[in-house]
Length: 299
Ligand code: ADP
Image (cartoon, rainbow, N blue to C red; front, side, top):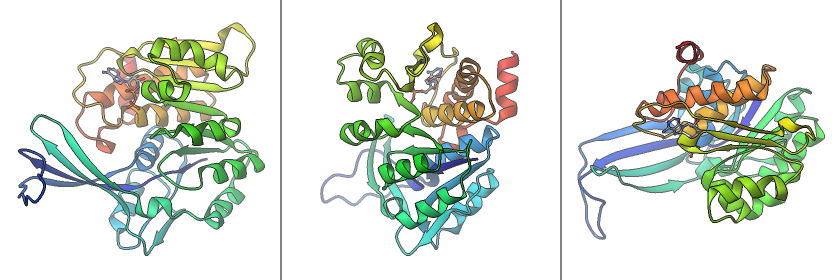
């Protein structure tokens, strides 16, 4: 089982001619409300990849549609607390030029309690994983509890908080970062120096670095043999929307690792899943199924 301790957001999307200006009231004739948040997206990707995923988080008790939607996609929602606190949400203005302007309200995503985390981890057994992003509270507490219970920790520090991330790295079994997060964390001016400096700065850490259309780089400092650095190319596709590419990658890669697949095969499979994702518009809805990934890889 993978316990994904993560955000659940409602994304309110409005299409507009231009961003609302100070003092202006503007009508929008295009509105969509979509399930989002890196946490929820990664749970959906894990479930679609065939992993047993229990989402750990919190929403407002009136938002039952979220529970129904996650369940219908294969995510176990039994550990989502239903509170009298607003569900995390984003108000997104989208212009025709595809620019966006976003208000984010973290709401219930920051209302996790130590008792909830304790309860979750008391159910975990050896071989289970905990996955965290950086959109919920109690990150360090959850990692410490996971370590006490011999549960492995995967961390995707997005959005990046350099101080928090450095503080918890010793508790992390697998770090997953994109280019920008890697450069921020290491303080590198470009991605090539980040790739070079990372294993030197963190010699004991296993790191998956996703590099957009350049693919993926993996280091495992805990292994002293020669195969501790792996590079995998991305698949060449016509990208239309890269939203949720990283979330798809993480879900498929972790699912594959948990099934006992070796790291190179897991990365290739996750690259295929995220390549399909970028050819489709949308976030959670653009994440492919296992079968679609199998068909893509068979081509
Ligand atoms: P994030 O969405 O977190 O910024 P990336 O942009 O690194 O993450 O994308 C994650 C993975 O998605 C990449 O490692 C790659 O395999 C795949 N991917 C992203 N963009 C493309 C693209 N244009 N073409 C093919 N694959 C892509």
